[in-house]
Amino acid sequence: MKTPECILAPSGPLNNKSTIGRERRFVVCKARGGHIPPFGNPKNVLAGSLKFSMICPMKRLSNFFSIDSFRPTRLPFVLLALISLGSHSSRSSADSNEPQQPIQFKKILLTISANEGCAVTDVNRDGHLDVVAGRHWYAGPEYLPRILRHVEEFSDYLHSNGDLILDVNQDGWPDVVSSSFHDQGVWWYENPKGDSLMIGLLWKAHLLKKTHGQNEVNFFQDIDGDGTPELVVNRWKKNSPLNVYQFNASGDSKTYSLRLHQLNSEGNDHGMGFGDINGDNRPDILSGMGWWERPHGNPLQNKWKFHADWTLGGASCPMIVKDLNQDGRNDVIWGKGHDFGLYWREQLEPSAEGKTQWKEHLIDDSYSQAHCLLESDLDGDGKLELLTGKRVRAHSGKDPGGKDPSCLYYYKWDSMKQNYKRYLIDEGGGIGIGLQIRTRDMNKDGKMDIIVGGKSGTWVLLNQGRS
Image (cartoon, rainbow, N blue to C red; front, side, top):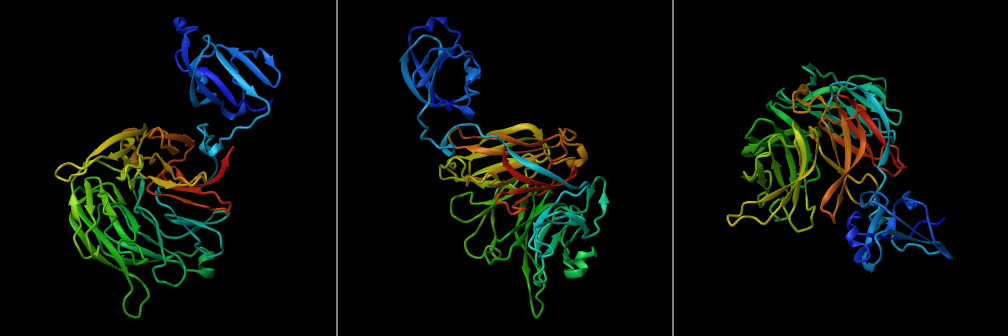
């Protein structure tokens, strides 16, 4: 039998006997997944079509049909279905409202440790992407572990708040840049390259800059637009300075050093994001306390004005800045890194005094510690999905929900309903998040894969598409 093409169904409740035989609105629907719903036995077989009627609760109807249009009709209180045997629907799956099956992933566990960072690069330049995660790098496509650096432990943490990739000595081989929550320094680890790399020798550690402690996460952002990223430091100490470090190569040496630029003496707090808040087409920087306005002229020489427009408390690293509802003002997607709640903040018209104003919308509060967010086109439809989950044992399990099972999800934005729909990647199977989430096409099949590092393990999740 061909896929059902249209269904006539009552749009109101089905238990109201007084409505039988009266003028009612019926919904023209399309069968989900091409199957006839199991509500009863078909009746009234007609030539060229199958017409049947049955009683059906509307709640169950929504599991099988998506609304197409409304038409008035005068029919008794029953569900009528018309299945055309010869015609084809003109609507494509891309613009239908049919529910999508979740993307399936092949889950590869690389190691279990207290490491919470990860990065992706071709470490050995063999044409295969590799994973860098704390003490080791993992050679793709088999992801065999090799030592990279020693990292000391404290409590159930490592003295490492993430992994960043940059060719620091400009020799054509990717190096690793990292710092710590407490240690006062930024280090780079020199890729030993060649045979020394493949036999598993330690990477030589170099101090880039003596800095400060009380760090949350570092970000690479090209603030000045010269093609080389700056190191932007998010600090968990409330109202800390906004420090940005510029990579410079001076004299005969090609090796970068770090130069400090303090863009403002206040405003830094747990959580950071990047994007244009005030609509002047210049990307600003966000913190958990507010936002710094990018100045005219040289962004590393001129002071960034701080606007204390909100207090989020333990905001995610990063927060994502984008115009979700297409009203011309950028909104903010953020999670509570140490509590329950994932939200999007709708930017409203500014106040008479010019202060930004916001309306909070809940996305999900079923799990806690959505510490890191990432957008990536996982299903290849040209639209970015939101990817996040639970940071496992953040604050050693002392946060609200801190000992709940691990989880990882992606979310799709529904522009019509103005909300997100959640899709499962893993619940309770040991896959959560740490401080960083990466997506790359690891196996060259054209689909974006996921890499996470957290206290429940460092994982590569190979995208298998929808089942």
